[in-house]
Image (tube, rainbow, N blue to C red; front, side, top):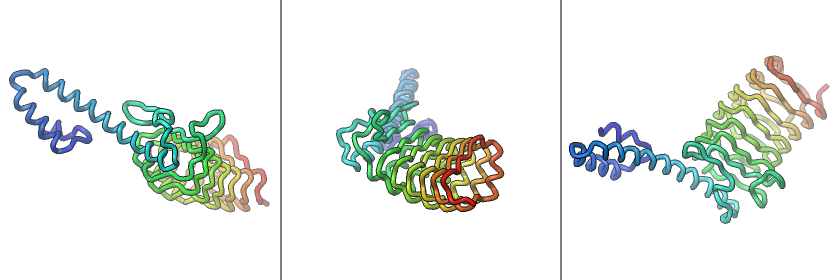
Length: 239
């Protein structure tokens, strides 16, 4: 019984001891109560996880002066955790009244995120903690002021869709090659002068947009992209 209780997520030692005392007192008298308590604790664990997620989103909004925006207005939940976060100022599809200028390290607490939309803001830096969001499948960074992507981007191995068009990216970290599940990569309208050899790891890539950059040469590994259907290279310095 102690082992079972100890595995329930997020319980403090005080709560664990209290539950154990309750079980000892009631195990003989009423077995059904034990089941009820365990179910209640599991429910509490889910609530605690959501509370942690919610506080993280709250911190992100507050850091950008958006204390009046509700967490539920910019996020969706699944199984008690936030799995989609839309922080976009697009006139038609956005959720924010004006652009964010900072993304706090709290983003790394949202470990169940599948979708993160940060498009059309004024972000110049991504925190390394974004690498904790290892379940991300779609990351939208278009129309910001990013000059680089952190090496921790390579931790996001579940990523299928990465959109970072219309930024100021000059190089890509070699760790981006870890994103072997990528299907769509949009890097158009940046300041890229070269691409890492690790680009050839994207064997599942179907669409690669690189137009309007400063590319002078392509890595030979681009020939490994056997599933590529669209490759856009217009308006570069290729010869």
